[in-house]
Image 1 (cartoon, rainbow, N blue to C red):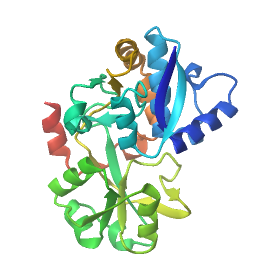
Image 2: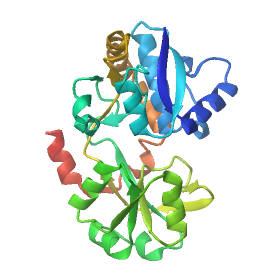
Image 3: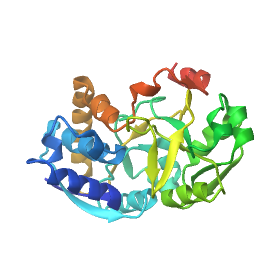
Image 4: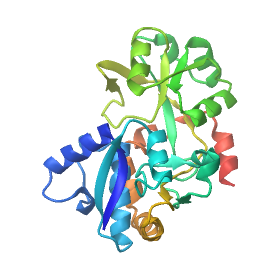
Length: 277
């Protein structure tokens, strides 16, 4: 089945790069080179594999878009079937979205999406922080303009010294320029957990992390003529992939789940546990 989907250009570039290193479509692979898998690319592969297990041979027609809001708008208008990227339930806060989207079972379950605090390796004050109060005192955070849940969770933890920026690259530049000090990001799957964004090297504050207190899902458009068929196939396939352990496996390869930080303190751990009950 030909399925039109939206995709960020960077994810599409990663997808095409992976294709150039394999002799078969990514959704037919069981092992992936770590350096070539991002979380966004993992989501695309999960979606394709789920559809295949659900009875649909997926032939994605990719429509590059600049951001997630454009992606959901295109899906809401039926221009594509869905955006193969995990979104939280706050996506439905746009009134007209509530009746236009079918929501899949969670890809990342409640409490599983955790982040750490990245800063410059020279920022000794932040790197010695052990709790939310010390992070708030010793540096200014920066988040994306649409990272509403990140901001709410951080503020609920008492971290209020936060500004926002329009793009991911802009956030890194503002860190380098000294206009902000840290970014909440999922842990990198590099050997030392550091990451480089546009030439700007960042390291995590060791020993602490936080949960976004949400689950994440695929949103399939009822406005697309094949939306309901695609939704049913996705649901069947997601449940099978969960049973096989593939979702956890590929998200671990993508850095979503990283054994390196398993023992780190979850700063909002009590709220995470409460949400699981």
